[in-house]
Length: 325
Ligand code: TRP
Image 1: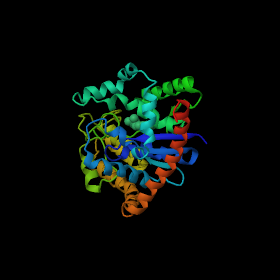
Image 2 (image 1 turned 120 degrees about the horizontal axis):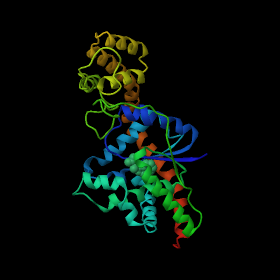
Image 3 (image 1 turned 60 degrees about the horizontal axis):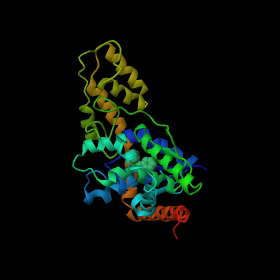
Image 4 (image 1 turned 90 degrees about the vertical axis):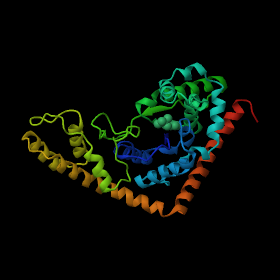
């Protein structure tokens, strides 16, 4: 069975885009592959963060994972900082990789521009730690978005270099796309994203909050009647109807649109109700885990023990090949 490693930073709660996009794809992966789903808290601290909430933010992602349906009997759930081998391997691998290659990466340049007062060593080191995450478990497949592709290329280069210097040790990890839907932004522009305020509905929002989020979707394009627009707020509302399988309602509102009779408040209310229903299943499950902290602790500890064993096996090989111990 091929091994998959997937990492998510502990920045903010999962939203509807993650739910229909990444999460449903992840659920399928756990049945087909040997998966490690990690909360990469050490990566989270490379940009300004609040140490008082890091621990809870990390645990929140674990709770979200569990509520979505990731099953610790089928996959490994990991908190990166609980496995010190990530950092050890990252340091060892950093000694065989060029600084100038890291300085050239688009993600590094973007973050430098975004936080000019926070250009730290960890930020530069980010892709090396990410390579270590993956190589530590000799993962072959990594589900990532396009923006992470340069980082995966670094991981492959490091694997290749290590293998040629110290002997065949690591497979070269490949990216792949999980099945998932495109969830549009509530701002009417692009896709739903954690980093764009007002673009998303989180998985723990209540009906009133969902209604408020949808109320803000821009619909006053000026043009009405005829064919549905292809982009913008109105188009995105219709995409959401489709995503939620509200086919009858889609036809009705499309008809109303072309006859210039559409009432967006009705459309938004229909959407809000259905989104809330779908999320309630998730929220109920999450509450069950929230109310059973002992169970969650034992799942986290179990994941840690299994991952420590796998990580240590790789590290013994790496240390010995590099001339230690
Ligand atoms: N850099 C990834 C992101 O921002 C998170 C990440 C860290 C990751 N380590 C990883 C993803 C290992 C996949 C594999 O999304």
